Image (cartoon, rainbow, N blue to C red; front, side, top):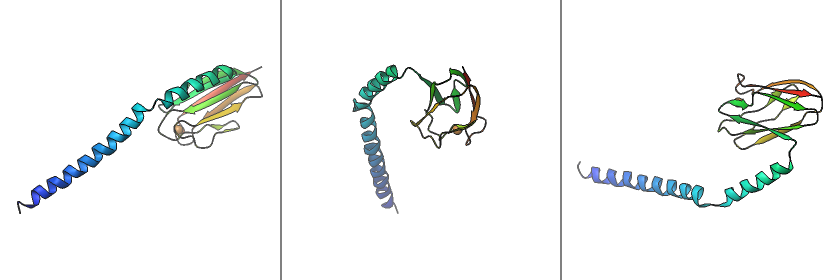
Length: 132
Ligand SMILES: [Cu+2]
């Protein structure tokens, strides 16, 4: 009976080893690659060129800002920073499913008040007020 225990410990040791190796690789991959930093710089320069785009962050199950005022002809871009899937639906808006990192852009060509929600989390509400 006692001979089983060392065997079990070996098995557990192996599992721990595998987890450590797998986790270690993932961690190294995230920290070592300088690529994402360069990509961010490129995105920033793109954003500077696209000054007409107004950003709305979807973060912690909220639209930030919840209420946004823009002028006719301006483009609004929603970006999902949550792990959860969200969307932007209502008043003619329909983003489809947005996973983490996805974005949705919409050009507001008419004045008015555009209320929208996330259909997955209907308590998430946002408004875009478009003025002439
Ligand atoms: Cu949502």
